[in-house]
Structure formats: C-alpha cells, structure tokens
Length: 135
Image (cartoon, rainbow, N blue to C red; front, top):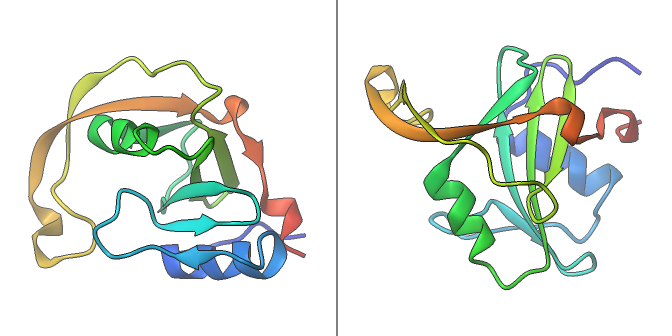
C-alpha cells in the first residue's frame, strides 16, 4: 500500500475512524487532545508533518496536558510522508526537553512567526507504524 501523503489532521482522523476505530469522536476545539475512542478507552493527539523526521516533536505543555488525563490509553499519532506513527505516551520515558524556535501556530495567520517552545522528541522506532492498517 502506498504511504499516506499530504495528510492534514482532518484526513488523518477520517482514516483512523474508517480503518481502525469506528467509534472515534472529535474532541472540543480547545481540549488537550484531538479525539477519543470509548471502545478503546483512548485519548489521541494528532499531528501531521509535511517532511519526514526519524524523531518527532512534541511540545512539553501538550505532553503533560495529555498525561494529566485519567484515561489509561493516551496516544500521540504523527504522520509524515513516510508513514503514520502511534506513540503510547504512558509506556515511553519522558523525553529530554529543550528550547527550540518553532512556529507560533500552524493553522492561523501568525504561522510564520517563530517563538521559543520547550519540546521533546520521540524516535519512530518507539512507535507502532500504522500506515499499513489503512487499506
């Protein structure tokens, strides 16, 4: 199967709902996560990257907001042109944090403004690669 290309979070959500979790529901706009599955008792944050990286970035504030959830299953799902990677945040060690200049936002008009953010990285070897499930 060809790898999913040019994904955005809405398309990624639709693919996961169609092929993996039919009960997937979108979260409210300002929740700490993007979607939930009651069947799998799972909270999911989605990210789509236009370039492939072997180490995928997560913001420290997002990481801790996700882990504050009482849900046992918390996933960070990130797509790149090479695949879709699902990280189980509760089973991985906390990333090493560092300050890095990042886009202030990716969806709004100030996306060209860079600001320092505290970020960590997860290596794709620590993820389940789920692209093959999208058939």
